[in-house]
Image (tube, rainbow over all chains, first blue to last red; front, side, top):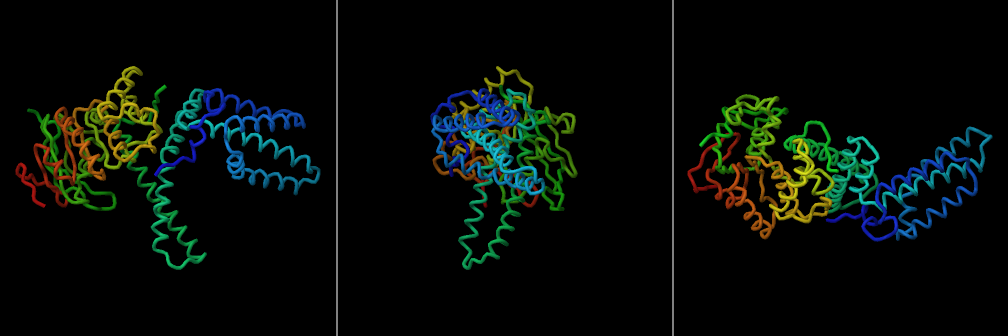
Length: 211
Length: 224
């Protein structure tokens, strides 16, 4: 089984794909800091929206992909903004638009960064910027094992489906519970074996990495 | 001819009370190859995990070059005794092949040039040159098995402990693997746990493992 959902667009050609990860991480930071800290104005937001749209086009990423990934985060922002408006009557539509724009611009910049950079080189870039090694290590484990976890989930749910005759909502929920439990136990056991494998290769708690 | 690994009266109980090893005596002589055969759950993997100090015995001793493996020397022991795990997805935990093969040498505190040199050599030994920047989830199972061996070879160990090196390979990959293993057997002291009887026949000595005990089998005579 091959998985592509993380690196798919990073391995095709485009303007952002050709830039080095360090440049991209740095510009992402600049854009986010500017959008969040500069006084909100129509000009700033319009300029940012145009810039991001242009970057999406020159990097050959389907806009639907960006929108889909954004939809994972936007509801949280919306929830926060709406709860503030509901409790504080001096805030209105203007406040809503400003906060929402800020979060949309920041999130889409980060999505652009991660979508156009292969994960291992993204990690190398982050390391160049002085990210603690422990965090790099945790992220690299995430990248290494998320695919295995996904495969395991697919196998378990396939095995379940092939033996399920009647399907009720209540039963589905119950099955989902056992699947989550099963996945947790399997991951826990794997983590012990991986740790043993690390020890076997001289791991003593320090994280060394190739430059 | 000197003993490199000596096991004396080794007992091991898992934390849940399962009796895994039940009085094991074994000595491995430098340059030889030893096969451990036996049913699933007979304790082969558990024994291997004792030989480089991942597990410590409940009772009994494990010695390397005449010295008991303890907390102080376990790091040096692991550099000289390389263990290749059965499931390459446990063995390989870094994002790319090169980083994974370099993990051991980096922990040994070698220079950058030395590490990259060893990584390159180990990858070419197992036939994976050019795979350096590949992400591990894009490798086939056979390639992962080879990469797992490379991660140990890059540490230049004297002894190799192999847990089921040919398990799960298709006949073509298995044939390919035999060539690689024959080469390794001629240059290292090897202890291999396996169900693969053809592989066991390549080894100088054979042990049958049965409910936590070892029984030496007469040379080349395998009965199941």
